[in-house]
Image (cartoon, rainbow, N blue to C red; front, side, top):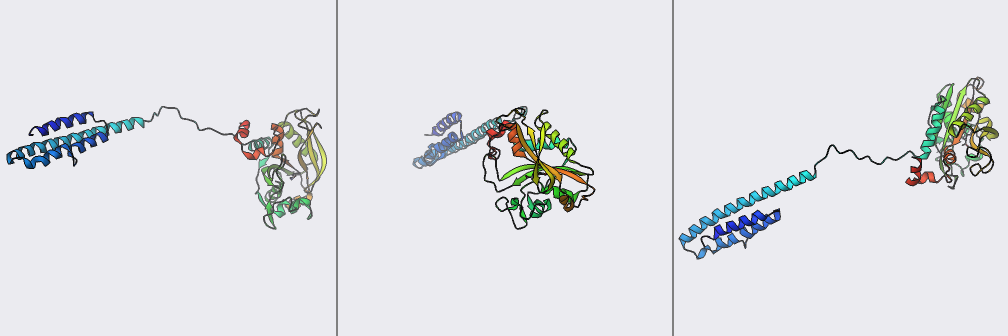
Length: 340
Ligand code: DAH
């Protein structure tokens, strides 16, 4: 009986040596010191012994208890140190590892097309200006010489916000803003969003983009307009396209024209892209109407100017062979990536 504590100590040592986790150590503690623990049992059984024996066994049992406790504490420290160093090495950062690049997208084809158009005109000395998408009815229609009963003012074509404000139906109101805020010579282009109540189909969208152009100076004539826009068509599509100007009507220009270019795909012979005609309509243009100059505070006796406006989606569709305008707004990454 007196040797029992030493026996338990050996037993505990052996168990602790094999212990690898905190749970193993806890099991040892309970096995010896718990309610039904082996050392607990010895201490309980002492009542039956003589006083001498009790004293001796008590001494030994307490010594062994302390020793096992300190072995347990030591083992716990050891295990937590091992766990910590395992965690540290798992968390180790290799600072020499090359970085991982996040996937990079590409510019939207409409943004790219606007960029190309802007670059061509910037190279001819035009600066870029922008106007608001929410415009006054005055800037969008009245100041642009649109008759009070002009059909484009119709509720069925225009998103009105109030009686006096709307979502601009064209970028042309930027002409008015520019004329009012700057004095000639003026040479600007203005890309931006426009809105019309068109039902979406392959060639229509209630939101679309235009690029407007305006040049005002002394002695500007129709030949200047033709030269600039012909050069634009050649730079945008290819050197061999030729252009022609068809009379047209816009309220804010007089005379007005639409510019066609020979088909950049078939060279004018007729193909699917040009619908067999050999020609492609590309933009509207004209000499700025004196009424518009006057509303803009420009002396219409002294200055003349030309203006033009083009649909960005239409140009992008032609250039890239896109058959449906709605593809531009779905943002299907498989479509957008083709313009990377
Ligand atoms: N604003 C016209 C439209 O939306 C396009 C246009 C035609 C703009 C002739 C012009 C221009 O500046 O001179 O259809």
